[in-house]
Structure formats: structure tokens, C-alpha cells
Amino acid sequence: MEYRSLGRTGVKVSPICLGCMMWGAKTKEEESIRIVHRALDAGINFLDTANAYTRGVSEQITGRAIKESGKRDRIVLATKVHGVMADDDPNMRGNSRRHILQQCEASLKRLQTDWIDLYQMHRPMSDIPLDETLRALDDLVRSGKVRYLGTSTFAAWQLVHSFWISKELGLNRIVCEQPPYNLLDRRIERDLVPMAQTFGMGLIPWSPLAAGFLTGKYKRGEVPADGRWKGGQGPGGRTLNDHAYDIMDRVAALAQAKGCTPSQLALAWCMQQPGITSPIIGPNSMQQFEDNLGALYVQITAEDRAALDEVAPPGGVTVKYYEADFGPTLQRVL
Image 1 (tube, helix red, strand yellow):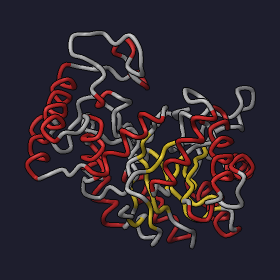
Image 2: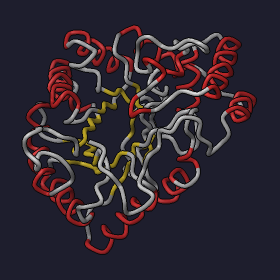
Image 3: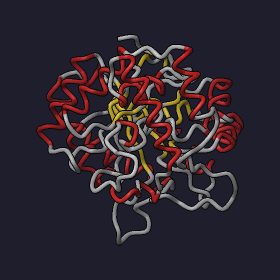
């Protein structure tokens, strides 16, 4: 396993991060734990979850798997805060100091650990001053409960704003961003990637396979009857279009020529893009995990990259994933 630096932290992480969102949802506990143990045995040392995934169940299962492995000291464990944790309490959500401190304690208990390696704001929140949020996160770092701070689906300008606040107030700064990034939506290449490279940030993309579309399981002219694109509608109301299938056709052709699966090629492309630290995979079965693991052995050549750029242009978008805040009217994603 060739490990990579997580931004400017000096921490080394595997080039694939195991996302645990499916634990307790589509994937039962026993299978989830088996996948975690298989990943650790394969050399993957980076795990990502969130308090909002199945309202804490994902963290509980992840914590049990880590404890049973006996490898906590070798694992870079990431989780997130922001999502709704109770429907009947307006304070059980968001980026307030109250919610952050409360949920960090709850996550530590569910994960059965004394510290979180990477604690991330799951989404930005425009109606809470960012300095309020950063002060709370800084307190967690200084207390030893959190090692590093991150974000998910923040705009480049918001991150630069956070750097300025951290410098002015002497706070620990954000070291990692988790944006959506795949061949259907390459908009982060416009400003987020150059910004991250300039300021030494790690980038750990979510949905590198576009919620399973880039696996090739969905066929042109057919309305998907199941899966995350059932009826042609994907997560967050995203809609497939004909050009998405053009991209998929190119991925499938290149994969066939290389003797790998389409998902392995699409994941390898994301993994080998400039500025990317570690794409987050989200398998719901051991079979899917083993397929994802094979992406580590797929080499994307300059010719492959040019062929993909032709149908999925750099900085372009076919199906919108990147919905970071580009103005003061941000709506919370809860």
C-alpha cells in the first residue's frame, strides 16, 4: 500500500478511504464488521463515518469493528457533525457550539474511542458565525478529543475565510475538505483543487462512483427499477441525462481494454487526479468492497485521461453533485 499525506498534517493515509455510511442501513452489522476487518488487513487505515448516518448506528458498528480488530492506534478515524440527530429538538442539528460539543462526546462513546482523528463539519451553515463554530472545534483539539479538523462540501471561499479566522484568533485550522467528485461533476477542479494545493489541504472526495452509476449497472434506454438511481432519480433529486450515458460508455470501453471493471477504472481515475488524497468508497457488501479494492492496481495513463477528458471535460458538469455555497443564501442540507 502506497500511503499519502493528509494535507499538511504529516499523517499518512491509504489512497482509498473506507466509507461506513451503509453500516446499519443497507449492510447488516456482521457484514459491516467483516468489511472493516478485511479493509484493515488489506492495508486501508482510513475510515470515514458520521453521527447522522442512521442516527448513530454507523458509528456504533464502526466502533465495534475497530475494537474487535485491536488496531485503533493504526487507524485514522474520521467522523462528522451537523446532521439532524432528533426530529423534535431544533438544537440537535447544525454547527452551533452546543451541538458540536454535545455530539463529539456522543460520537466518542459510540465509536468506543478516546479521540477522533479527523472531525468534520458535514455541511456549512450560514446562519451561525463561522468563528463560533471554529472556536468550539479548536477547544476539542486542545482538549485532546480531536486531532484534526475538516469540512465536507464547503466552497473554496468559505475555507479561505476559515483560514483567515483561524489566523486572526489563533485557532487550529481546517486541514481537509470532503467534496463530491466524479466524472459526472468535475467542478471542484475550477477553484477548490487549486486552493487546496495552495494551502496544503487534503481532499477526500465522496461519491467517486456517482452513487453507483459509474459501475455500469444502469443501461441507456432503461428506467432503473432499483438501486440509488431508481426511476432515473438519484440522491438529492439528481437526474440522469443522455450525456451521463456517453461518459459511462467511454468508461466501460476503457475498462474493457484494461481488463478491469468500470467501477475500478472510475475510482482509479479519481484516485489519480491531481490534488486528490483519498476517495471515499461506500460498499454495501463484501463483493463491492473487493471490486473497489481492485482499483488500487489500475493505472490511468495519459491516453486514458485524455479519452475521459474528451467526453467529461475538466471542470465540467453533467449531473450536479457539487452544491457548495456560492453566496449568502445557503440552505442547510439536513
